[in-house]
Image (cartoon, rainbow, N blue to C red; front, side, top):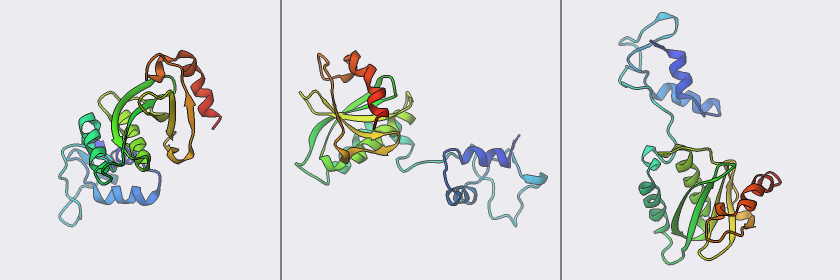
Amino acid sequence: MLNFREWLRRCSEGVEDAQNLHEIAINHNPPPDASWPNGGSPDESHPRQWKHKDIPTVTDEFGPEMADLKHVKAYIEKLAGNHPGEGQNFTVWSYDGAFFRNCFTVQVPNTMLSTVGKVMQHWTEKGASPHQCKAVFVTLPGDKLVRLIRKDGRDMAGRGVEFEHDSFNQNPGNDQSFLRSLPRLLSDL
């Protein structure tokens, strides 16, 4: 049987401040097999009744459907629709600290690169094949420059940090010397 403290601990994973933890505690109902502190149980006077069959999880601004690439691209394209004709075709790459793991191509304006980086980090960390996401880069077609737009969960899109790779194609991960030097280059920032 799951006790109340364990349920609250599971719900609050990743929550950084007390206000958000309080919101989770009052807005999520415990699962039906949960036991209350001190052996108590809910009754008619308790404001929260047991309704959930599963332990509720902390959701983020994107929602669970954003684990699917189709929804990720649709979300970005919907946001980019507010800027018709301003976009460029960017290939977005996630980097886990050793390898480039995921990529997709979208047409967005430069002003949306912060959002694109955040979405890529979410998709990499919570998608169908989750991996750690240390950095997110973008490239333009035919260009050997990779632009850093997100590093360790922080926005880097407006800082103009670029690296050059010497891959035989557009995939920066095919340049092994670049791949070996990237952890040091990122730690120097």
